[in-house]
Length: 390
Image 1: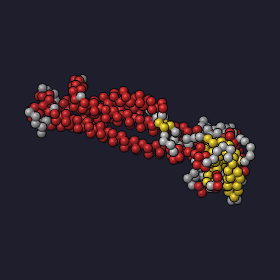
Image 2: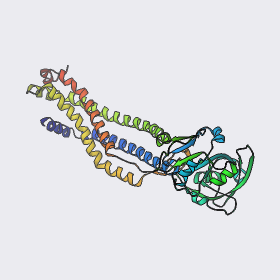
Image 3: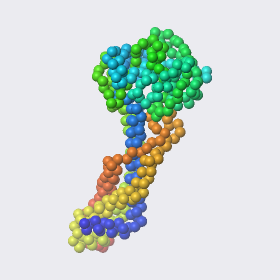
Image 4: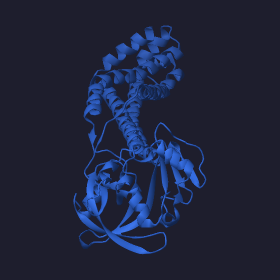
């Protein structure tokens, strides 16, 4: 208790030097918590949107399907067996058929992924109900990104060409009946959505599909011959890898800020020991043991982190709360990178994040404060009183 009182008095006596160190350290607190909060918010939003729009409770892929190999799409289809049809009828599954096609907007050529979906499905947030129309042409809907790149609007007709399962090329006109907005780029970029039955008819693949998406509350529905089930751990691993990559930048920023703060504290401790050598010698001569004096100086350095945490809470808590409320708006064009990212990211802070950051900074500060204080143990009190340091 006495060491704490002495440490507090000494820090208050240092005045500006103490508060400069505390302010730099508080910036490390606030910026690290803010950056991790942004990544946590991005992770939560990306997961939620991907589940709602694309993967539901998981997906069954036809055994030949590989989304990264376009050459597999031609053979990536299988019949919907009676057991699968039963699950579809109960609302546990919704099928999709995928093929490649080419559209010709305004005389230009653009390769697209043609995806057939049940207009009456309720498993995904995809507004497929707009495909329930027969007013001229094949009803189709596209995302905002595809509409922007293709310069297409609702009501436009555009020629589409495809090759069916027999290798025969055919063409027809599709009519854009709806343009939707989504944060999931893979549901938008270069994708044209049409009714599943019409797609099966075009491809000469009656009662066939490429992907079976399960309802969120359903998940795995048992093994189906010729189909591989992909759970959330597999389907969301790209998002995890992306967030982990971004975290590396946060670690670099954290190390940079901590290095500045720790260097300032280390230098302060060294200078303090040099200037207060007579005080140290007097304390030892009056009966304080060398370990007690080392502890005193270590506590002085560690108290910087305590004051920094208090200062960070005073100005950082309102700023972080405001950021979590209004969000962080992403720059224009970010959605064209193919990332699952919202226009505005709302940071998510947790008790574990705040306590973990605080504990890490306090431990680091204590260690850095102890290193120069070890020199006190080698001091001769007589020489220290006389102003000499060995």
